[in-house]
Image (tube, rainbow, N blue to C red; front, side, top):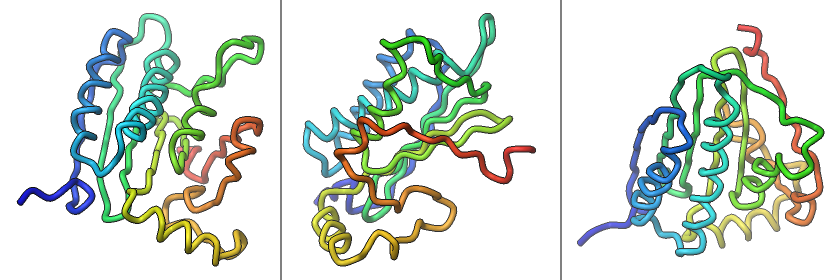
Length: 185
């Protein structure tokens, strides 16, 4: 009997040239890998769109004109979650403040995925997304109702992932990017 991805631990690490022409192949590979998860087609679409936004940001913003680079996609499962990390080795460039039709990708990621953390330093940018698996979602929702937000703590090394987010505020609130102590290295 075949077990679903939610019942076993998996790890995938792939990289592609940071080239917009590779986005379709990345989406296709991701969708194929997610096909074994215990996620509905709608949730798979949400995850693919959020990852596509992160990868597109890396392709478009991480490397300057004439620079070549890579974008890495690391996916792994834990018993209760699907984890995805998008990594580039370029330079963080804040979104332009004068373009009213752009700069919504990070907000979209926060809307589509349960938890999103972004870290950037001299080594590049890492976008970590964590999505709870459906079998554990009801248990987590019950636990969150019993636990006051001030009592919740982040897992070690994953700042910001345990913080409850008001879904109504996600679309309108700015997304702060915080530097960590190791950003000076």
